[in-house]
Image 1 (cartoon, rainbow, N blue to C red):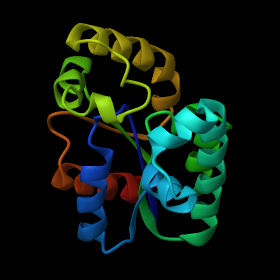
Image 2 (cartoon, helix red, strand yellow):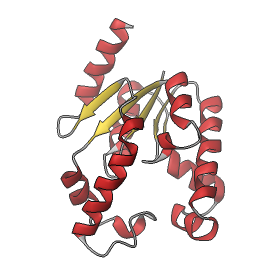
Image 3 (tube, one colour):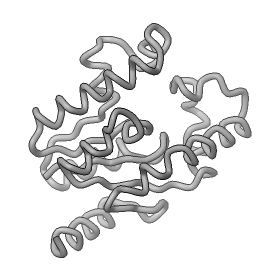
Length: 173
């Protein structure tokens, strides 16, 4: 089984993904961490040195590599991963995709402390600007996220809730 987690930055994809991998005895990968490992530089450095277009192409390449290399995996994608280079089609065709839907005010709260380490949020001056950017970003990405066959809405998105959702989905498939 391949389980892909998609959603906005701060949705909890990595945290939940690690726990789901343990619960299902599967390897776990964070796509951004895999890009960093392969590039030998941080996402912020990649954005600063090469730009977003380069990063998005590299993200697509690494995603396709992961699909080939890992027949069984829980993968936390980057927030924008499904929106570029037909990545969502790859996710939908090769595994089960779960959208972690978290309201923007909660995302804002979660991201305030970490915004400086995220290239697309680092230049924002305050919480209001961060929240406005998140609303804009979500509006642009929502049509991609909504194509996921599974959706888990915060705050009820726990390992147990996802396990039950997966069991129901697999029983109906």
